[in-house]
Structures are given as structure tokens and as C-alpha cells.
Length: 231
Image (cartoon, rainbow, N blue to C red; front, side, top):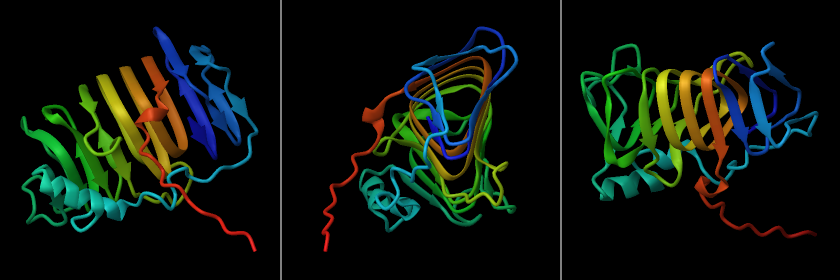
């Protein structure tokens, strides 16, 4: 985990385990219980860093005419939700809210916000959910990425450091993939959750009775090589 702002850890119960480098420009704050175990020890006061995917991956890549959008369409696993006419679960307030046992499979691109609660199931191909706005999850589930390592992608740009681009709550979750929200915070609050992959966000705030975050750099999409010419 890396944050250009701060990382907060809280919760009780069995405690939290973070396996992989954890760095913050400002501070890393634990609850009074000190229930988080870090491997290795976290570092603070590090220099600010740019988003590692900046200039290589864009939210427009997932749109209908983008490279990922066209690939998913060719595989028959794509859904673009731009207006209420595109999907019955797109509400008039601009939030896509699937429910009632709906099965999600493949790549979903939403112009607006996403809110997913209990009662949603997931198909065999995995899931990639991309929103130009905020993404919120509640309820328990197991999810594996579908498209090039990306599990959740939010293009939301926070107007202040206290606003979350992605918020996750509920019971038991097992997720594998990249949660990518460079413009806002990621907040995780679960009774039991395991995330294997990477979280890229401006700010990370997590708590739970049992929360394991395990770094897996191999899940990150390959970054194309670049050439720099010095004059």
C-alpha cells in the first residue's frame, strides 16, 4: 500500500495483517488496540509518488470504444451503462444499483456511481467494474478480476481528502485484483476480508475484526516500456 496522504488502521477481534510494503507521505495511524501486524514494518515520511499507472491506463480504455471495452465486446462480456435506458438497475439519480439475484460477469462500464449490496452473484469469468463516479459495496462475496488485473476502477476526483472513491463494507469478502482509485480514498470496513493484489488510492482507511491485505505485484497490468531522449 502507498498513500500520498495517510493510512489508517482500526478494528478489533482477530486483528489485521498487512503483507507487503506499506508507505505513507504523512502518517500511519493505528487504533488504540494496536491490532495490525505489518510485514515488513510500515514507513512514513516518504517522498510523494505519482500514480504508477498514470499515462498508461485510462478510464476511457474501458469505454465502448476503448481498448478494454472493445476486447470485452469481442468476448461477449461487456455492458456499457450510460443512461437509465441502458440497464433497468440504473437509477434516475445516476447510480447503478444491481440487485435481486442478478449475476454479473465480465466488464461493466458505468457513467455515474455504482452501489452493490447483498443479493448479487458473480459469473465464472470474473468481474471488472469501472465507474466514472464513486463505487460502494456491502454484503459478503468472493470476486476475481476479469480484465487485465483490474477489479474495481473509479474515476472519481475527490474535492477534499476525506471523500472516498471506493467504500467496502459488510460480512466476509475474498477479493483478488487491483482496486484502482487514484483520485480519492479507499475505505474498507468488514468483519472479515482478504484482499490479494494491490490498492492504489490517495488515502487508505481500513478496519475489521479480521482483515488481511496481501501484496501481489504480478496482478498489476504490465506497464509499457518507454523511451526518454535527453537533449
